[in-house]
Amino acid sequence: MNNYRIKRISSSIKKELSCILRDLNSFEIQRNLLSIVKVSVSQDLSVCKVYISILKSKVRSYDVFASIQSSSKFIRKELAKRLQLKRTPEIKFYKTDSIEYAIKLKKVLEDLS
Image 1 (cartoon, rainbow, N blue to C red):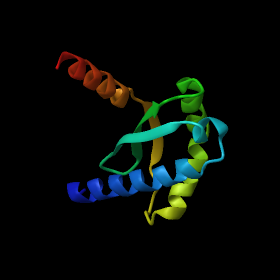
Image 2: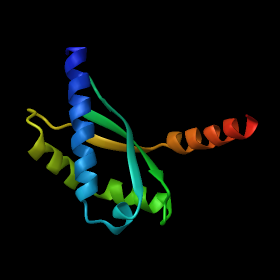
Image 3: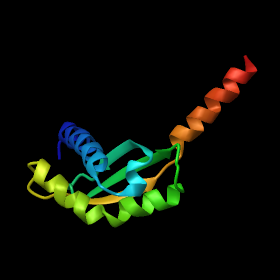
């Protein structure tokens, strides 16, 4: 499949997922700052890997991530409504700490200078 099309679909999924996550009524999700770091879609559009970073967690980040994973079927259904794809990919969520790591690294570099 065309690599440009995959990138365009990944970008659309990332945009729609951020809206869907913002609209979810889960207490754990709404009380925290979430960031979708990366979305990668397989060439055959069967699997979509979503990397999420959870910042400034008032609840344990594990609980927030578990809430997102438990809502994955609902999220996929909402994504299918919003995107005009023949087949909506299966969504797999992965937790990443890359943004927190970048913030810590920035603080260390600021302390050195």
